[in-house]
Length: 399
Image (cartoon, rainbow, N blue to C red; front, side):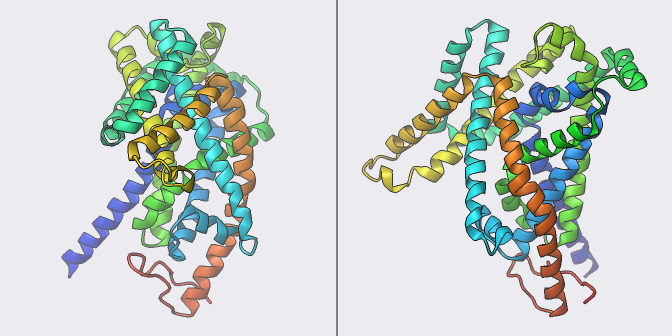
């Protein structure tokens, strides 16, 4: 019996850690690895930047905690049902999340194309327009014919980019330790607390696009305590990674802005470190990470829409996927033409504001209240409200 309990505990902890890692890998993708997001949302504000980053991760993980609890306790089956539950009795407002999600995904694919094109431009001197066409062509072909292969390789690509980023962060911080120490000693930069908090909320707002993924993976968590543990672990590892990135970028900020390298600051720093193996490892991993993210994101779109009634006349599956992929690629390539900087500043920024209004604030207020009330009512009624595998999700509460 004791051995069985130990096995159950081990399985529970494995679930807790795996869900935490899903959020980490979703956050620490190509956009994070370029340093562009951190520069625009934190670094330009000086010494308060690391604190803003921690606040953002706290907001994000607390929000996702409420999402998973609401999703699991009610036995919901989709993000649409989740937001209908949140907004009930005003269920139709849930369409706002659909607008947010699809716009955010298009911006994300546009950012992937723009980031990969900028990488080709800066590394190989390929003109930006031609680089966009090249990346777009690669994504289109892989989405239609090689999405499964890319999905299988995505884990390896993620490990590669995270490993190379960790090395760059450590070397980059060490190379600019005097500058970093001086920034915190004199508290240089704009220490506007109000702006800092707004930026933290905005960052959490556009990162909330991962909610559909997180509630799906979060099914393995059997109780609010497990959800809390998972989000605490995720908060810690995401905060460490983001803060290290921010500190490194702070030390190099004056140099890479003067050099006009704001689009891909981490690439500039990797080159300046003088270690060619670090630069090329990062360069290759970043490009592959962009491609992997783009293919899996577009494929999700294709898988959702290639069965729509509008395409019933196209009997061939490949033909339908070409039509849907081509349409998405045209939109995304159009977005990418404005450049990575503007996509992250305006696209992510405005979607971040929308995310604050329709996701962050509602879940941290109404959602948290509804979750506490629901769990208390079910505990007091001593009712088994959940079907497998969520038995026991309702915990004991004082009635």
